[in-house]
Image (cartoon, rainbow, N blue to C red):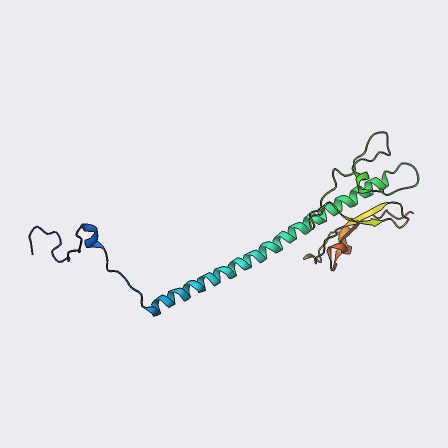
Length: 184
């Protein structure tokens, strides 16, 4: 033992230097240990994948519910605009709009009337195309419905104006139509 050595019991590293002296022993895994680590890693990846799949399912349903709420809002806007167009028809004979665009710029008056600010896109399809419900008298459009193929998540708990939607098997069953009050 030299009196000048700081750590007399530490063996000398082959290349010398402090970092070599303090480096720990190398750990080598045997075949069984390495296999266990691999299986544990695969199991962790599988569990994370299941978590991501569940999250994606919840996100998809949440997005569909948002689109359904938007469809209900937009459909009711169309119903209200068609009702305004019908009720404000000049003269004794009431008429429905011949085209949806007539709701944007009603030229039946001296000044233009706007019953709807724009033709909304169907949130379920992303297109500005709507199914049209023709008036029984053949005098225009009395309502709209979505052209989307799909089953709604919401099947109950509708507002009174939309009670007919309860139990609808498809979005096309959500028919936003204006029905005038019966004559007395």
